[in-house]
Length: 159
Image (cartoon, rainbow, N blue to C red; front, side, top):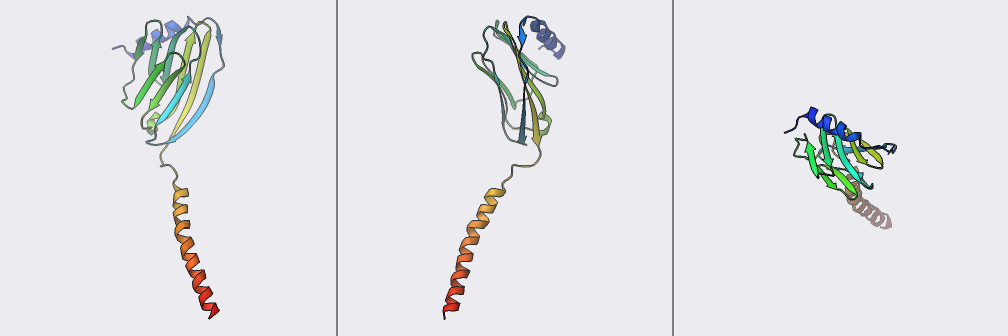
């Protein structure tokens, strides 16, 4: 098993191969509640891709396209990374936890240049808001009661 220093060395070693333009980094913000799944999609619509990498803090995943080799120090069972080398790389968190919050980076290196996407993931402690459903239930029970009162008042006034 490769340690973090070896992964970083390999990552930096292959970065020099990208000799052309660096496309401006795309920034995205994602907010989810604790326990919700998260999917981060990294578009890799480039030709002659040499490397795809994902990083978050000290976690590193590197895919070397020429050898179809995956190098990683990821340990979480809740984290999955899929590579569809033709168009998309996807990072999935099965149930987000507060310690999953942070900056996630996908970097695609090709002969034509480097494309980088960053996500700032925020994981909130509270459950998703369910107030609209609760309000609807109050409304559905309140309307018949109100109609019954109006009918009773009408009957009393007509007598």
